[in-house]
Structure formats: structure tokens, C-alpha cells
Image 1: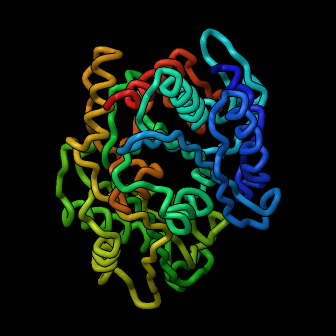
Image 2: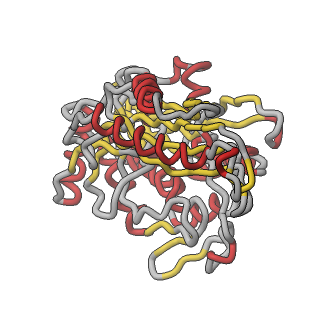
Length: 389
């Protein structure tokens, strides 16, 4: 299993948005691995992208026939860039095994889940499982899934059985007991103030956009937290969050009063709270704070609505909890998260999906690694789910 993962890590699969060639080469290597393992040849669904090698972003689907409901496992081919190479102790794309860990970019995110699903399917088939198993290997997860899962759901919805048990091994914790069934919505919005730039020695002749922005941010922050106090104990924290995270101004010198200033809020919204409600509340909070000569804009930057929760008593949740109990002797903890995975796209289409894996949470970090013991153990859980009647 470790050799298979190392082989895949050795093939960078970076989005053209990151200056990469896409996922074609990795998809071809994976096709060869499937053949070597005796698994069915994948069907390929290419999303056109002229920036990528071959002009496409490939998505692979492997199906082992059997009875329904199918066990469907989704993983992604693409990885994020290495970042600062000086922070790495090894070459990100030359995998190294040390002390039971396999180091390399994409080892944990999402190579561990991908390889675990391969060997789980192979083991289940060899053990005589009569359940249908579907493996999806998709592109573009790290940049929004427009060429991956979202493309497939739009252009090829027939390949997603509505009653399948969907497992997405793309998030988790060290103990492996976190069973994620819900995700908050994600809203980024920009607050931009325009005033009038002048020399700092004569501020009365200008309109200081940065000072106005500071007042606006304080008002918006307070208004959002007071207007939307709802709680859902499934999540930690159990409330919607509204965090100013980025700010800038047009001034690049200490003796310039800036004529423009802006900030961005990152909001994580509980299911049931819509992005437009938040934007309107932010606009209302800013009204009355603008002096003469100033103007303000509040605009959406990015919005992913919260998808419906997977019911905690859904068959896929029950199946995973059973596998954890019988294989590991642990009780899974059903929860929601503030982050976003591509399971949300499945839930938005009415499908029941759980997100789970056993990881050290090294995704996107220098010296990313996969714990080989976790790779094997997670594959066993997947195989157990496939063997359940």
C-alpha cells in the first residue's frame, strides 16, 4: 500500500490555477495501478480545460458489480502546491518513509484515502462481497471542483445512485472517531470604503477611509454576532462565525491619509442561515457611519450555501459507526465542521454522505505525511463497510 501511495505522490497533480498541468498524468498512472491490481478499468469523464495537459481534467469512476445500495467512496487526484520549499525537509514529490510515516505532498490529502479505497475494494472483492462498490477519483477539489465533482454532478448525474452510501475520506482526526455529517456554509464578503487621499499633515482636507473602515468593521462585527446568535450543538463552535481576516488600504507610506480601505470577512454559517441575510445585516450596520465625502460597498466574494445535513441515523452513518465499533472498539462521534469538503455538493443533491478518516491533520502543510498504520486501518474500515449486508 505504501509503495502504491509513493508512486502516486511522485506525479504532481497541480491545477492550472496553481501553474500546474492538471491531473492527466496522475490519472494515467492510477489507471495502470488499477490494472496491476486486477480491478476493473475505469470509465473516464473529461472536463474540458485548455490550460491543462491534454486539454482536459480527467475524472475516473471504477465500479465493481453487486447489490444495492452501493458503497461509493470519493477521493481527489489533485494536490495543493508545496509552498515554501525551504520549510520542507524532503522533496515534496519524492516520497520518503521514516518512522512509519510516508512524507510527500498529497500523502494525507488525499492520497491516503485514495489508496485505502483501492485496497478496500480489492479485499472486499476477494472476500466475496456481493455489494456494489463505486470508486470516484476526481479532479479539481482544491480549487472548487468545477472540473471535478461539480462537473460530474451537472453533466453526468446518472453515475451517482441516489440510495448509495457515500464516504468521503478527506477530513478527520487522529483518533479516527470523528464522523462528519454536516458542514457550515461559507461566505466571504468585502467591505470597501472610499474617502479622499491627502497628506497626513493636513487630514482635515481629506476623508480617512481607514478610520471609517475601523468603525464600520466594529459595527458590522457586533451586529452580525447579535443578530444571528442561533446555536447547533452538532458543531464546534456551535454558532455561526464572522471573522474579519484580511485588510488593506491605498496608502503605502505613513504620511498618506488613505483614500480607500477594505477588509474581508470569513463567515461560517449554520445550516438555515443564508448569505444574503448576512450581507444585508452588514449593510444595515454600516449605514449612518459614513461622513460627507465617503462611500461604502459591501459585496460578496465567495459563497457556498450550507447543504442539508446527513441524518445521524442514515444507513451510511450507521454502517461506519458499526465498522469502527467492531474493528477498533471505539464509538464514533457524529459532528459537523466549519470547514468545507466536496461532500457538501453531494448533500446539496439530496445524497447521504459522511466524511471520515484517521489523520494527523497535515494537509497543506510543509512536510505533509501519511501515517502508514492509518492507511492500512482505514482501508480495513472501508472493506468492513463493503462487506456489510
